[in-house]
Image 1: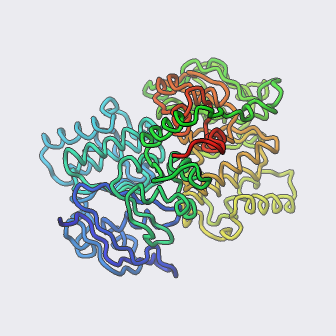
Image 2: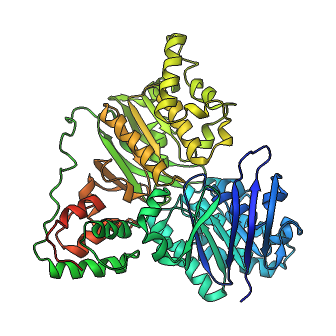
Image 3: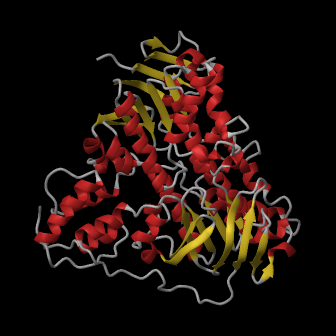
Length: 575
């Protein structure tokens, strides 16, 4: 069968680069094949995706070796606009490719440029919007959408072209778990119905294990492994070494196998893992439920909350009601996780905590006083903010200048103290060696760390992180969350918004669930994670670890792989 995409001995150097971004890359994708591209941050995944449509080297320049053939066409011999008829590309940051005044116009834009007949344009737009769940948002401006909705819109634009291949660069990094599952279900359906092939670069290992035919493992610009999800994710030791997070089910069974408590293939899908654990439960009825420390152990004493919302509602221009009568306390010294589906109001709520938005009704309090009585400078010194898109806070020429900028307005601080704070922040975030680099020359994960460092130099009491692990590989996510834990242990109040529920056990102590602009539930992390009905009613999905816990023992309250391993103590029957 002819390949829809073929890389043959491809190496590529960006302009002025001394090391290649891609090294001797060779692989093929057959029509209708779904191929995952996994690897750590900086492995070359985005560069490889750009090379599919000739953007590398046609747009970026540099030195290019080998060949890429898309639908039989050499990508160095055909213009990008001609190649785009055969492959759609969805970038990691959807905002970079949204230009129209409405959702409907955005999807129609590329089709109009192809001079398709208006009836066909309308048909394709309707089809793409329905497939991505955006049909009800046709008239909404793309800039008014949540980050996850923008991601789905970018995917809809690519699907409307009906290409033979769709290339997705971190397509679900900003999506909630339900939307992520919907996107992968869409991918599987489009393959089945249209024979569309997909190349998916990302860290969504659970979904890639369920959906992909093959996984390419990329590191240092090289493909170091090419195999089925079972072969790649089942070799967890290799994946972890290369900073690729395996599905939680694969990690659990690999670690059971290391201690001689599992024999045979390592399950990489949830259904296979649940089935194996049910067998274990039958063979090992003495399984001991996890009895770890409660999230409220050593919790701070509840005095006056440091931040409070009192019956806060907020409507954007145009009438979109983002918050509805929200009352919520953020307690001093606590670590609070805020979760909810895309469009639930999470980012809007955070902006109210920071004074970036004013309530349409209700009141926000900082230490019992109305936030409206504080200046922006006073709020910034007490409440630090790391946004969902770190690029919005980067505007200096070097990393060091970016970190130092926050201190320029602090007139009561000596130059020596400012320098000490900058050096400490750079060291804390592992940026010392990058201090002279331009922030936009760094990977997205490294740019996020620059923003965190710029916030830390002010030493705020409260640190608010909006989707801090988006686009991060396993090591990067652990580094950022490890930093939040150290800051919390040092006495700071930490608030984190994330869709990556699987990452938060061991960090957050309390969880708040938002939906439709309202607080739907809140409580200890363990309680929220095991309230499956409430999560699913909020269009969220329980983590694999929580589901596996129930498969092994109905009364289990484990929420992490470590806790599951504690349940499966030595002496259990082996499979």
